Image 1 (cartoon, rainbow, N blue to C red):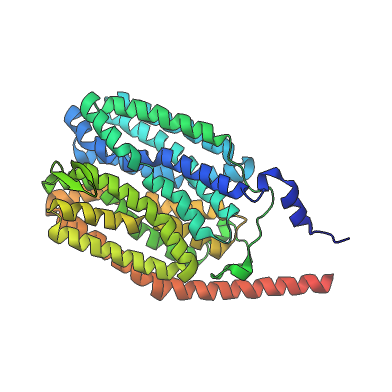
Image 2: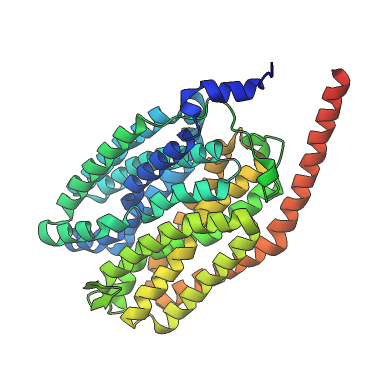
Length: 441
């Protein structure tokens, strides 16, 4: 009689770990992410209507966006700690309640204090969903981390695509308050329902090393150990550089379009006829959503750092074209789509790189800790409003271009050799531990 390994028996006996289970878990995570996408990417549609209603000024209103992103990211390590303790379902359910409450408060906010309070609540809710779903994907797909993290992040990137037009239409027809209320309650309800189906693997999913084309550590490192390495902080710095540009663009695309005089120009592109701004935001979400799993898949095949270099250079090129020719509505629409098509890959490549470097056991916590870089980057969003008011949008685009070029150089000339040395040292540690275990046996 042939005995199966204990791990294989566990995988066979656990219904939640059936072969199709990981794909269902991935699908549930993608849908949850789609439901929180508007909290970030739909925000730009509300900025000018809120300002027209209350005259608080763009800079003051955009500070709510900064607060949202900061709380969404900086609290993720705490939220993922709860995931490791109690599982993904309860944390995502809590997130669904919080995002519904956030947009409900936005609908009734008559002061900046209430607007900022809603941003804090929304950030907590979105971070609970985001950190949980990405971390869960990394655990279910250790051999395809780029693709899994990218597909999950695609929900966040593209989730707003199908609702941009309905939200814009509702704002125009019934006011931004009703749009906040209707979509906030709807999105929260869907997340709450989906949370009931989320599970973590009952046992560690084995890596198919014979098919693996990327170097991965055999040693699991906790967040405390990860933050003591230069590799972690190099990734963190690069994340901040690229995320700051993308957040500036996401929050400011509507003001930029209005200042470039292209926002209300009617366009007919790809069979779609609508205002240039609405079309741009719709395509941006589609390209952003497609780019995340695509570049994750590319990185699974050619390496994380090589893929980062390609994406960051394309992003810089898109901004150069926008700066020179963005007052043409066709160029504006196509170049913003091009930019967001490569921007979102940071949300697949950095978590995947983190998992490769520090292992699967603490993948959710380590990726969540790295994700706080987005919160750090968020503080440059109001700075973009100030910079544009004083020096024009050319200064903002120049800053984004410079940050992307610097990050591209760091990817191949600093991070790549640094990670290679780190993984080699970790391999020696693992081999020494295995040798000691054999001697003791």
